[in-house]
Image (cartoon, rainbow, N blue to C red; front, side, top):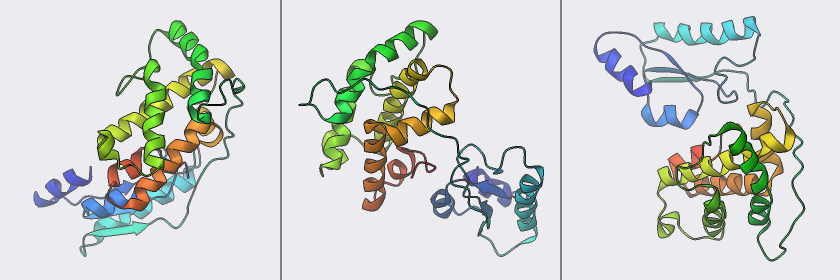
Length: 227
């Protein structure tokens, strides 16, 4: 959307947008953008709060009168979470103390993943690997955590993002069987806040962000809402 805004502006159409990831707006520098630090997927902030959502839209439209572009304004309110607790998914006890906890954990929930696949007949895995390759994906993250450059492991930023999506899909699909019917946000919080693999993904995301030369991976290996 930010790139298209430049095209529309060159054609004489004023544009304004709402940014959920500030660095993206900084990098692309669209003409007018309101940055809202809200959980991803909820660009207008509080669900069912008409007045709050109207305020967000009003602040965005007010930028249309500005000609001192590019403009990037911050919405004054920050929403880090909506208090949705992580799901309570019983993870099997450690089986092999010689394995890293994240890899041992991932192997322990394989049965739940298989049951979910049998029940629904589909999976979101497969960008980099299937369930048999989860341990290898986690080992890549462990190697990066230990200081190995991702490129030495054959991973550019886009491939790292896909790796994170595969690991998350594996866990959340297993979690659907461990916890029963669950909302996607609760499963997301469970993965990133409770599991060893989720903590590993977040830590690697933070390391990549600190390195400064992994903008894509540092922003998308884990959602910005998971701090």
